[in-house]
Image (tube, rainbow, N blue to C red):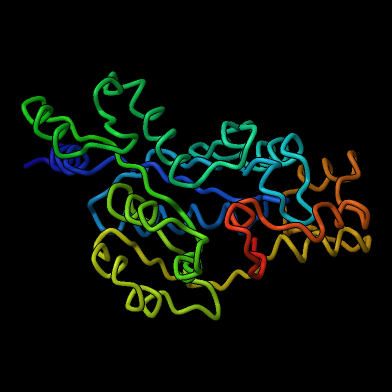
Length: 280
């Protein structure tokens, strides 16, 4: 069999995959974009997937995180950061919502949007969640592989699933069962321990991809904001275009760092409880 034909058959059998990352991106860093590259390499090496798009979805201002710059600026900085990428894009939908949007709802939205251009949108959503089995059966005669959407995150998100009232159990189930996770390792976290400690994660472990970061990259958006407030250089930590934007708009100052101080994150406020603020 000619090599080209073999490659075409292999690509046809691969599952097209979209990666979605939700977060503050306050500001976006080289680490944030590096997570996408690590995830794509890992998924391609499995031979099962073909990553076709990466989506950066900054959170709404109503997330109420301390020092959170306005969504207008965070979107603009992220767009500058991905200008040189041919597969990453920034989506403002989540940031434009009047209230904080739960992660599973952001996944549902982008699942619908991704299928829309392929004329699969009608009838593919039931109760706001993907119905993969029915679509697979109906499309099998057409030899069409339905795209998948997975949540890209740091492996420490698995630990937060155990935090009381932070996540709804039904949302965790939908995320890991219907969509799936691609988790990048971080120093000081043990993702397999988090999976083993939660029965729900163990049940859908096959849909959780753990990616090892061979070159440790612990760039912290929090530390970058502190450095900017002190007038220190952050060159090579975030894109030059983003540094210029920050300076031009004077975004991160001691005053802006106190924004939302003393308040609860919106998901915690809904349960009237207090836990440590999640890391960027």
